[in-house]
Length: 288
Image (cartoon, rainbow, N blue to C red; front, side):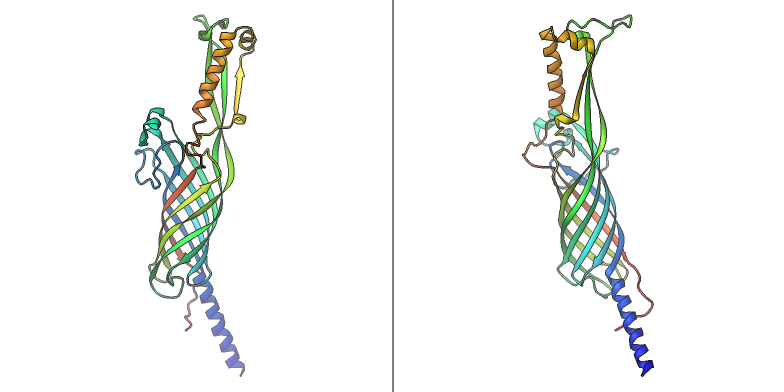
């Protein structure tokens, strides 16, 4: 009786280990990422790179926990490099604007996947389309601009007395800082079981964000600092034309970086590519 009991326990443990192994997948993802914003192209899926130097890419790690044959939970860590360029747009006003740039987006997300056919079972092979949705957090680089108005120098290297617009120089620069927020990821895919241990997925997913500045097109006033040379500032207070020129330059620079929200909506970014996962922990025994 004890031997029978021990045999039942052994078989049950083996089966539980096998089920657990079928539930765990660990893998990598590789693909492309692109922004749908206010600068550059408005294509939902950007297939081709900007040029040979600007190639958008998405690289990630994923863990999948299969709840049953058709439902899974997935956790992602993803690095995205995106580019945007008005010269590649189809709208005339964007082409004439000639603004371009790049950004880096780091994402972590938790997704629920639903498969239309049994795929997470012990079959040697199989395939199924699936849909997914969830919540995510991401970090991206934001910019803080500084506008500097300084007195110009003459040929001898001495500062000029600022009497007109030619007597001072205006320059802008910026610093990057990481900003964090939440997003809503969702999409579709197709999963193929190559054999017991290896699975390949093809998918495309959209990320709705609550930001309108992934392409630096909607800089807030609080992120703009204006510095004016003390003597220039003092003289401009009694020189209306000089003051007007300083304000005009400020408005021009600020306006150049506040071109966002063309469609009165926040930015999106899309990721498409492949996932390769490995089912790990399978014991040497098989239970039926």
